[in-house]
Amino acid sequence: MYRRLLEDMLPAVRERLQQAAARASRSPDEVRLVVVTKGHPVEAIEAALAMGLRDLGENRLEELAAKAGQVMPSSVNWHMVGHLQRRTAPRVREFASLVHSLDSIRLAERLERTAPEGVPPLRLLVQVNVSGEGSKSGFSPEELFWALERLLGFGTLRVEGLMTIAPFTQDEGVIRRTFSDLRGLQEEAAERFPEFRGKELSMGMSNDFELAVEEGSTIVRIGSALLGERPE
Ligand SMILES: *Cc1c(COP(=O)(O)O)cnc(C)c1O
Image (tube, rainbow, N blue to C red; front, side, top):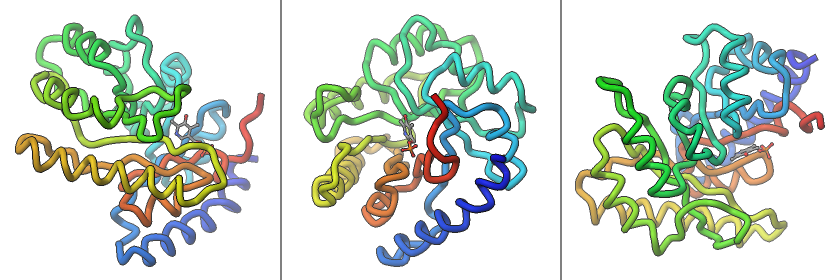
Protein backbone atom coordinates (compact mmCIF):
# COMPACT_ATOMS: atom_id res chain seq x y z
CA MET A 1 0.00 0.00 0.00
CA TYR A 2 2.76 2.50 0.92
CA ARG A 3 4.69 1.60 -2.20
CA ARG A 4 1.73 2.49 -4.43
CA LEU A 5 1.02 5.63 -2.44
CA LEU A 6 4.60 6.83 -2.82
CA GLU A 7 4.66 5.98 -6.50
CA ASP A 8 1.59 8.20 -6.84
CA MET A 9 2.71 11.07 -4.63
CA LEU A 10 6.46 11.36 -5.11
CA PRO A 11 6.49 12.55 -8.74
CA ALA A 12 4.08 15.36 -7.95
CA VAL A 13 6.03 16.49 -4.90
CA ARG A 14 9.28 16.37 -6.90
CA GLU A 15 7.68 18.38 -9.69
CA ARG A 16 6.38 21.03 -7.27
CA LEU A 17 9.79 21.19 -5.64
CA GLN A 18 11.49 21.66 -9.01
CA GLN A 19 9.10 24.39 -10.04
CA ALA A 20 9.59 26.23 -6.76
CA ALA A 21 13.36 25.98 -7.18
CA ALA A 22 13.09 27.25 -10.76
CA ARG A 23 11.04 30.26 -9.62
CA ALA A 24 13.91 31.17 -7.31
CA SER A 25 16.56 30.41 -9.95
CA ARG A 26 17.85 27.58 -7.79
CA SER A 27 18.79 24.03 -8.67
CA PRO A 28 16.48 21.40 -7.15
CA ASP A 29 19.65 19.51 -6.22
CA GLU A 30 20.25 22.13 -3.53
CA VAL A 31 17.21 20.87 -1.62
CA ARG A 32 17.27 17.61 0.27
CA LEU A 33 13.99 15.79 0.75
CA VAL A 34 13.46 14.24 4.18
CA VAL A 35 10.49 11.90 4.33
CA VAL A 36 8.85 12.23 7.74
CA THR A 37 7.64 8.74 8.61
CA LYS A 38 6.34 9.48 12.13
CA GLY A 39 3.09 7.74 12.89
CA HIS A 40 3.48 5.33 9.98
CA PRO A 41 4.50 1.68 10.27
CA VAL A 42 7.79 0.24 9.11
CA GLU A 43 6.20 -0.61 5.73
CA ALA A 44 6.32 3.11 4.95
CA ILE A 45 10.05 3.10 5.58
CA GLU A 46 10.58 0.05 3.40
CA ALA A 47 8.59 1.67 0.60
CA ALA A 48 10.63 4.86 0.83
CA LEU A 49 13.90 2.93 0.75
CA ALA A 50 12.69 0.88 -2.21
CA MET A 51 12.16 4.15 -4.07
CA GLY A 52 15.62 5.38 -3.28
CA LEU A 53 14.62 7.80 -0.51
CA ARG A 54 17.17 7.42 2.25
CA ASP A 55 16.66 10.55 4.33
CA LEU A 56 13.91 9.72 6.79
CA GLY A 57 12.66 11.77 9.73
CA GLU A 58 10.97 11.07 13.05
CA ASN A 59 9.86 13.45 15.77
CA ARG A 60 10.04 11.14 18.81
CA LEU A 61 13.21 9.43 19.91
CA GLU A 62 11.48 6.25 21.11
CA GLU A 63 9.78 5.81 17.76
CA LEU A 64 13.00 6.56 15.92
CA ALA A 65 14.89 3.99 17.99
CA ALA A 66 12.21 1.35 17.48
CA LYS A 67 12.12 1.86 13.73
CA ALA A 68 15.88 2.11 13.36
CA GLY A 69 16.05 -1.33 14.97
CA GLN A 70 13.91 -2.80 12.19
CA VAL A 71 15.89 -1.69 9.15
CA MET A 72 19.48 -2.10 8.11
CA PRO A 73 21.33 0.73 9.87
CA SER A 74 23.43 1.72 6.89
CA SER A 75 20.39 2.00 4.62
CA VAL A 76 18.89 5.11 6.27
CA ASN A 77 20.04 8.62 7.15
CA TRP A 78 17.83 9.29 10.14
CA HIS A 79 16.77 12.84 10.91
CA MET A 80 15.48 13.70 14.36
CA VAL A 81 13.06 16.56 13.75
CA GLY A 82 11.17 16.75 17.06
CA HIS A 83 11.85 17.97 20.57
CA LEU A 84 14.34 15.90 22.58
CA GLN A 85 13.78 15.21 26.27
CA ARG A 86 16.97 15.97 28.17
CA ARG A 87 16.88 12.69 30.07
CA THR A 88 16.83 10.43 27.01
CA ALA A 89 18.49 12.76 24.52
CA PRO A 90 21.98 11.20 24.66
CA ARG A 91 20.66 8.13 22.83
CA VAL A 92 20.08 10.25 19.74
CA ARG A 93 23.77 9.90 18.89
CA GLU A 94 23.23 6.21 18.27
CA PHE A 95 20.70 6.83 15.53
CA ALA A 96 20.49 10.28 14.04
CA SER A 97 22.68 11.55 11.26
CA LEU A 98 21.22 15.02 11.81
CA VAL A 99 19.25 16.52 14.71
CA HIS A 100 17.03 19.38 13.48
CA SER A 101 15.71 20.44 16.84
CA LEU A 102 18.39 21.68 19.21
CA ASP A 103 16.18 24.03 21.21
CA SER A 104 17.94 24.83 24.48
CA ILE A 105 21.40 25.30 25.93
CA ARG A 106 20.63 22.82 28.69
CA LEU A 107 19.95 20.18 26.06
CA ALA A 108 23.22 21.03 24.33
CA GLU A 109 25.09 20.81 27.64
CA ARG A 110 23.62 17.40 28.30
CA LEU A 111 24.56 16.16 24.83
CA GLU A 112 28.07 17.53 25.27
CA ARG A 113 28.59 16.08 28.76
CA THR A 114 27.34 12.61 27.83
CA ALA A 115 29.26 12.24 24.55
CA PRO A 116 31.27 9.05 24.62
CA GLU A 117 35.01 9.42 24.25
CA GLY A 118 36.18 9.71 20.67
CA VAL A 119 32.80 9.91 18.91
CA PRO A 120 32.47 12.17 15.90
CA PRO A 121 30.64 15.43 16.62
CA LEU A 122 26.85 15.29 16.58
CA ARG A 123 25.56 17.20 13.57
CA LEU A 124 22.69 19.45 14.45
CA LEU A 125 20.53 22.39 13.47
CA VAL A 126 19.46 25.08 15.88
CA GLN A 127 15.70 25.43 16.02
CA VAL A 128 14.43 29.00 15.92
CA ASN A 129 10.93 30.00 16.93
CA VAL A 130 10.75 32.76 14.35
CA SER A 131 7.02 33.39 14.69
CA GLY A 132 7.12 33.54 18.50
CA GLU A 133 4.16 31.22 19.00
CA GLY A 134 4.02 29.93 22.56
CA SER A 135 3.32 26.38 21.42
CA LYS A 136 6.62 26.10 19.54
CA SER A 137 10.00 25.28 20.96
CA GLY A 138 13.22 26.85 19.78
CA PHE A 139 15.27 29.94 20.49
CA SER A 140 13.74 33.31 19.83
CA PRO A 141 15.53 35.34 17.15
CA GLU A 142 16.80 37.59 19.97
CA GLU A 143 18.33 34.63 21.83
CA LEU A 144 19.84 33.01 18.77
CA PHE A 145 23.21 34.76 18.63
CA TRP A 146 23.77 34.37 22.34
CA ALA A 147 22.97 30.66 21.94
CA LEU A 148 25.21 30.23 18.90
CA GLU A 149 28.12 31.74 20.75
CA ARG A 150 27.73 29.05 23.41
CA LEU A 151 27.03 26.24 20.97
CA LEU A 152 30.05 26.95 18.82
CA GLY A 153 32.19 26.27 21.88
CA PHE A 154 30.95 22.71 22.34
CA GLY A 155 33.52 20.30 20.93
CA THR A 156 31.19 17.33 20.45
CA LEU A 157 28.43 19.25 18.65
CA ARG A 158 28.61 20.60 15.13
CA VAL A 159 26.12 23.28 14.14
CA GLU A 160 25.20 22.74 10.50
CA GLY A 161 22.48 25.36 10.22
CA LEU A 162 19.06 26.48 11.39
CA MET A 163 15.56 25.01 11.40
CA THR A 164 12.11 26.50 11.82
CA ILE A 165 8.44 25.54 11.66
CA ALA A 166 6.14 28.12 10.10
CA PRO A 167 2.84 29.03 11.72
CA PHE A 168 -0.15 26.98 10.65
CA THR A 169 -2.01 29.60 8.66
CA GLN A 170 -3.44 30.27 5.21
CA ASP A 171 -1.62 33.58 5.10
CA GLU A 172 1.20 33.06 2.64
CA GLY A 173 2.80 36.35 3.55
CA VAL A 174 3.23 35.25 7.16
CA ILE A 175 4.70 31.92 6.13
CA ARG A 176 7.06 33.44 3.61
CA ARG A 177 8.28 36.02 6.10
CA THR A 178 9.02 33.27 8.63
CA PHE A 179 11.26 31.54 6.12
CA SER A 180 12.98 34.67 4.85
CA ASP A 181 13.58 35.77 8.45
CA LEU A 182 15.33 32.46 9.16
CA ARG A 183 17.55 32.96 6.15
CA GLY A 184 18.32 36.49 7.32
CA LEU A 185 19.32 35.14 10.75
CA GLN A 186 21.62 32.62 9.10
CA GLU A 187 23.31 35.34 7.08
CA GLU A 188 23.74 37.48 10.15
CA ALA A 189 25.19 34.54 12.08
CA ALA A 190 27.72 33.94 9.32
CA GLU A 191 28.79 37.58 9.56
CA ARG A 192 29.06 37.62 13.33
CA PHE A 193 30.80 34.29 13.79
CA PRO A 194 33.56 33.38 11.34
CA GLU A 195 33.53 29.82 12.72
CA PHE A 196 29.82 29.39 11.98
CA ARG A 197 29.55 27.22 8.88
CA GLY A 198 25.86 26.42 9.17
CA LYS A 199 24.79 26.34 5.56
CA GLU A 200 21.66 24.26 6.07
CA LEU A 201 18.17 25.75 6.34
CA SER A 202 15.63 23.11 7.34
CA MET A 203 12.30 24.68 6.50
CA GLY A 204 9.18 23.59 4.66
CA MET A 205 6.63 20.86 5.33
CA SER A 206 3.75 19.41 3.28
CA ASN A 207 1.72 22.60 3.41
CA ASP A 208 4.42 25.15 2.77
CA PHE A 209 7.50 23.56 1.19
CA GLU A 210 7.23 25.49 -2.06
CA LEU A 211 7.38 28.83 -0.25
CA ALA A 212 10.30 27.49 1.78
CA VAL A 213 12.23 26.46 -1.32
CA GLU A 214 11.59 29.85 -2.88
CA GLU A 215 13.04 31.42 0.28
CA GLY A 216 16.20 29.33 0.32
CA SER A 217 15.41 26.07 2.10
CA THR A 218 18.09 23.37 1.77
CA ILE A 219 16.10 20.63 3.55
CA VAL A 220 12.35 20.10 3.37
CA ARG A 221 10.63 17.77 5.85
CA ILE A 222 7.62 16.18 4.21
CA GLY A 223 5.19 13.68 5.71
CA SER A 224 1.56 13.73 4.67
CA ALA A 225 2.08 14.99 1.11
CA LEU A 226 4.01 11.76 0.47
CA LEU A 227 2.55 9.20 2.84
CA GLY A 228 -1.00 10.43 3.36
CA GLU A 229 -2.56 11.36 6.66
CA ARG A 230 -0.97 9.69 9.66
CA PRO A 231 -3.01 6.82 11.08
CA GLU A 232 -4.15 7.60 14.62
C1 LIG B 1 5.43 15.98 11.37
C2 LIG B 1 6.52 16.91 11.05
C3 LIG B 1 6.82 17.25 9.73
C4 LIG B 1 6.03 16.74 8.53
O1 LIG B 1 4.74 17.25 8.56
P1 LIG B 1 3.74 17.12 7.31
O2 LIG B 1 2.82 18.25 7.46
O3 LIG B 1 3.09 15.79 7.44
O4 LIG B 1 4.58 17.21 6.08
C5 LIG B 1 7.87 18.12 9.51
N1 LIG B 1 8.59 18.64 10.52
C6 LIG B 1 8.34 18.34 11.80
C7 LIG B 1 9.17 18.95 12.87
C8 LIG B 1 7.29 17.47 12.12
O5 LIG B 1 7.03 17.18 13.40
